[in-house]
Image (cartoon, rainbow, N blue to C red; front, side, top):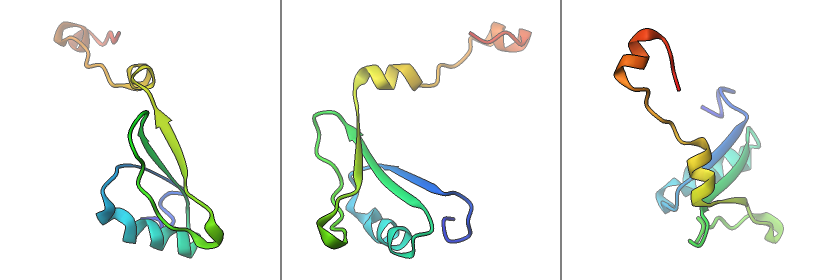
Length: 84
């Protein structure tokens, strides 16, 4: 998707090392800005970048999660077109 220009920023919220080849490709081709994210207090996905640089890591707390999480509307409110 980045190679096709479908986005310009990749924020990878994962510690799955199987994603490293995709991250490396996007970073090396300079087709999008790449950052990683993790929960505060856990380790981050590590990618060895050139010149000893590291990917920016966003550390999110439980308060951050609560501030942005989706909250489903109650069925009656949804039918009436009223969302909380």
